[in-house]
Structures are given as C-alpha cells and as structure tokens.
Image (cartoon, rainbow over the protein chains, first blue to last red):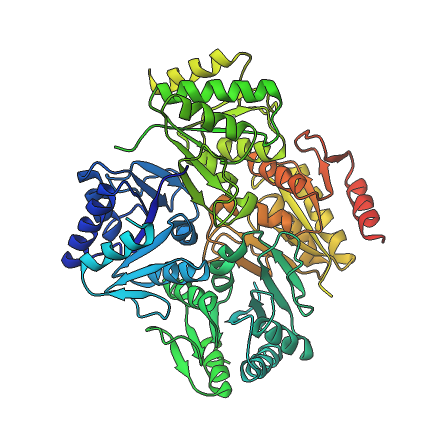
Length: 151
Length: 151
Length: 151
Length: 151
C-alpha cells in the first residue's frame, strides 16, 4: 500500500500570506499522515515542506537539478530530475490530488498538467482556470483534502 | 545558420474555424521559409502541417510516442520523444516564437511554458493568459510573425 | 537534512539469485535507515522494495506511468513520471550512490547515466562497464554502501 | 510521408579519426536524402552535421538547452529540450536506425536506449555491447545503412 500524497504547487517567490497558507497546509497534511510532494524549492514549496516537518511529516521534492542543490532545507526525499522546468508534470502526477497556492507561469503549467491528468485541483488565490475548484480560505483547502481522502 | 522556426499549438480536436486558421497559418509560414514545429498530431497540429506542405514548407512533429505512430501524414520530421504529454515544453522551446490557436489544457500547458521561457506568444481564440498577445484575425497572426522576424 | 538514498537498479525479470540478492540488499539498506530508490516495477525492483519493507524501511518508485499503475506492492512513494523509459536517469540521479544487480538494456542505460553523473556504482553480476566497481558477493555490496556513507 | 532519418551518436570530444568518419557518414547520408539526427553538439555530432551540410543535406540537433545555445553551427533544426542529458533517448528514438562512432558514457546510454527500443544499431569503434552490429570500416557503416533502407 503506497502512502497518501498531495502535490502542493505555487510560486517560488511567495508573498507573506501565501507563505503562511502553505505552512498551515503543510502542517495539516502531515497531521493526517499525508506525504507532501512539491517542486522542492523556495516560496510556497519551502513553506509547505517546513510546515510538514513541524508536524513530523514526510516531504518529497521533485527537483530541477541532477544533484538536488536546489532543494529547500525541509525536503526529506530529493528526486533529482535534471530536467529543469520539464519536471513540472511529474510534480502533479505524483500527488493523488493537487493544491495550488498563488503562483506564476510555472504553477499555471502544473495546473494545466493536473487537469490533463484528470486530477482534483484545489486553488487558493491562483490562476482562474476552468476545472480548478477555487476556495477562499485555507480551511476550505483542508476540507477539500479531507473530502478527497474520506477523512 | 539554423532555420527559422515557429511553434504552432492548439487543440488536437479543432473545430472547423480553428482548422482553417491553422491551415492558413501553415501555408503562410511555409511561404516565408519558416519551419513549422508542432505536437505532430491531429486538429490544429495536422492543419498547420498540411498547410505548410501545400506551400512546399518543412514540418517538424514533436511526438508523444517512441515510434512516431501518432504523427499526422503531413509531418516531415518525426521527433519521437516517448514522453507522452511531458513533451509539451519541447514543442514551444523549439519555436523561436509561438502561435496558439484555440486549444484546451494541453495548449494551456504549452502557453505557460512559452511564457516561462520568455517567448513571444500570439494567441487566437485561445486561453486568456496575461503575457499572451491576443489577436482577433488570422491576418494579425501573420503580421506578428512578420514583425518578429523583421519580414 | 534530506534522507540517505541508494538507487538500486536491475532487471524487471530477475532470476532467483538476483531476486534473493535484491531482497537482502533491501533489508540491509532499510536497517541502516537508507531510503531505497528504484524504478518501482517487478524483478530486482520489487525484491529490493520487499526487502526494505520487511526491515521497516521506506521505498520510492520512479515509475514509467502517470498513474502509478506499474508500481509493485512494496512501493511507499510513487513518483509518477509518465515518461516511460525516459525516467531512467531520474532513478540513478536520485540515489546518492547506485547498486546494480544483474540487468538488461534498461539497467545498462541507468549505469551509463550514473557514470555520466559521477556516481559511485557498485555492480553485482551486471554489465562489465569501465567505471563500475564490480563485486562478487552480496556482502561486498553492503560493504561498499557502508564505506560510501561512513557507516 | 515523413523523411528518412538516421541518428548518429558519438563523443562530444571526438579524436581525429572519429571526426573524419563522422564527416564522411554525414556526407553520404545527405547524398542519399537521409536526414541526420544527432545531439547537436561538438565532436562526432558536429562532424556529421558538417558533412551533411557539405552534401546539401538536412540536420536536426536534439539539444540539451532550452535556447539552443549548445548547437554546433551545422544544425539546421534545433530541438530545444531543456532536459540536459535526459534528452538522449529522444535522439535515438528519432532515427529510424542508429550509427554509433566512438563515444563515452553518453553514447553508451544512447546505445542502451536504442536497443531497448529495438533499433538497428551499427557501431564503429564504440562500446562492445551485445546487440550492436559492429563494423570495422566507414564504408561498412554505409553498407548497413543502404541495407536498412533498401538502397
């Protein structure tokens, strides 16, 4: 039985509110025993990993480099793709569902791939793409996670 | 000196107007000696290749399979990636500029990657993404191509 | 601090001796707190994951599909690349060192990538490639692991 | 009808004999109307492209960068993968058959992928891998090409 996973995506240059939201989401995912999968870098990716570690969770970073040097300090398992931005589809494919917090073009590419793959995508202050389930509070993100996993 | 290239992206299930537009764009690109790069499949991709061949042009399909079996009949050069949808960034990276005609989530992922890479993206009846130069007639697409290449 | 990882590579159609060796290696890696990274499928990949789980370890499968349907039952964390065999370099890049047990052309491609990336590669009854450290007993594999991690 | 293609692989740091051989192979492929596909860089890749251009042929470089800056001056069509060495399988998948001239670990990874994909691989002073058809003169390389395409 493989572990539960959620892919969390968002900008590498998060503003304070995005960072706090990702921290909270990371903490809550970890409390539920869900592995955090993300791009492993700064901003939202760092915050969600940091939050997960604060709650004793496990974090996976799908990195752009071959040597993992772009990982934030809260990544437990470094997946070193060496593929630069072409690693984006792997991030969303590796989460059973996807949470998008803010984000720029990289996040947009990930949202698009998540929808190609038929994933549930919960969006918080992110791109207005049809097919994304937009929510307006951090608590609602978790409610959607709980509903997805029947928790 | 490498050849001039334009990446043309859009839905594999184009409607008639999108198909006609892509045919026209293909013909016009070929007349200018510009190589058409696309995903190599059906819909907009097929139309732009067909148009280019009608004008004696050269077409490149960045395919999802290892054996090129997903190519439309108008692809001259099959690039067989074997990577499924993960080949999308390669399509846009291989055009000096990008033209988007209609399109669904796959096209959205390609637009996002084109913008990550700082490409000029001309959009015709496609996703309303900030950074895309939206035009409302097929002729304007070509005007933007001519302006890009100083033709 | 990210976790220690070893990539274990080998044929998806292992013979009995290869399977037993991979089981043993998996068990021993897990006892040392080292995460097993592999291609996530059958044969050597399955055996090393099974062994790791028997010792309470953690296993990561870098899978060929988008949906993880090719994972063996002992993969904890499914990395769904959707890239078919193009995922091979990611397997070896994600291990701090690499162990090859038997193997056919897929394993050969992974050995080549590991050497491109300058990884330590320990080989057991595998391709005779210059640069691989060939050993002749399962115990020696572990000795090389211990030496690599200063255990 | 797509064009005939041969993937030519070999070291980016070719010695003089390898360079001359690749030049000759490029010239001869071009004379037969066969498109040269390669990794687009220096050494054997440069030589085969240069040879092909001398005979008026067409060359495709499957490049490691997003911007094509690693292309040699004889690449007509730049396929910009942005995937670093992970682009290797695309090179061999995009040739209907494969010619290996010399080469180091990168070439070894490409030979392995060509064999995974069931391609005919002709090797000249390259890795001794089972499944490769080894020849000992440049003329024999072309004889194998002619036989493959029934020329």
